[in-house]
Length: 475
Image (cartoon, rainbow, N blue to C red; front, side, top):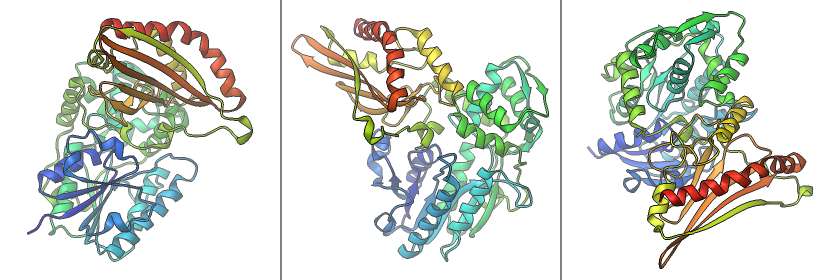
């Protein structure tokens, strides 16, 4: 039997980035549809797949040509006021394209939740997307899952930070809602089976782990696995989802818009009630304690393969421009240093910036800026970084736009700003070392954007020179 040709959407995201190597191990031929191909450039499996630029709302004729199985892993959660309608249009477009191309099967990862409940907007949209994907005569397998436990998942990061940061927590009533968390390893196994096993019948399958718990139970178990003291939870029935999401956005790396949708979904009970995917696909569910311990071990090691911040989510990409009357003003802060250190040594030192190591100068001000960002719904400084720099990765409240060792590193700000900002280093080798140029670039939006630059510019005057000099000195 020939290996299937599989189109994976969302390959640069949390689940997709782990599914692709698993499919390659099974001998599948993989094609990845991504909006930002550069985000896959450093993936260890990049040369083993075909990368197709585009999105699920585009003309998919070329992307679908010759495909046996089309995998739908994209999600527009919280992406503007019309994100639910956009999800529906995208799913319908994908289904039509699959039918026109003669695709044999669609596989979709959706969300748990009973149709008899009043579902959150997030879960209802997940179900509606599944209906849209199955609306043609292309056989469709929908796997519905709830809380996914794995290093770097949004659910795990919420659990991790809330439990570690808050020994005593005032909690809303959703901490008593039952759920059935599932390990990311089990999700990948289920998806691989649905894609490669032709004997699996089309339909909706519900996926859960070995344990049914409340969110409070999960926090207690996490504390035990992490060696923390017992956490004290003080339930307050009147704490609304909106207030809860603001608190989650402040304490965890999950931005407020995403936290709001996730918290709203925590009100719904998400447990397996029928058509269990693990039984149908022959995948044994992992105990929650094992799943948490594995996720903790990978997180401590720092080599997290994918995270929820990898996704092209709108609140990680501020792209509004000035109105036409505002002109094209750009502010710069440029610093240049000549050193006898090689370009390779300087770039190696520069590549360690951020995360636990920090920013070489003005750590108090960096942390305060991150805290202020979280207070207004931005990502703040809690996202950290991977060991290696990769295009598309989060780095505290920045996003890596360009990495070209040993000469170029470019970061785009994802903090809440009245404008757009970048931080760039260019390293030029010389006969006796190199020249390092550090540039902070800021494009303001309207009057508020210009006032913002006037306020922060004095701080740049003593932070940025020290930062550059310390990077070079360390090299």
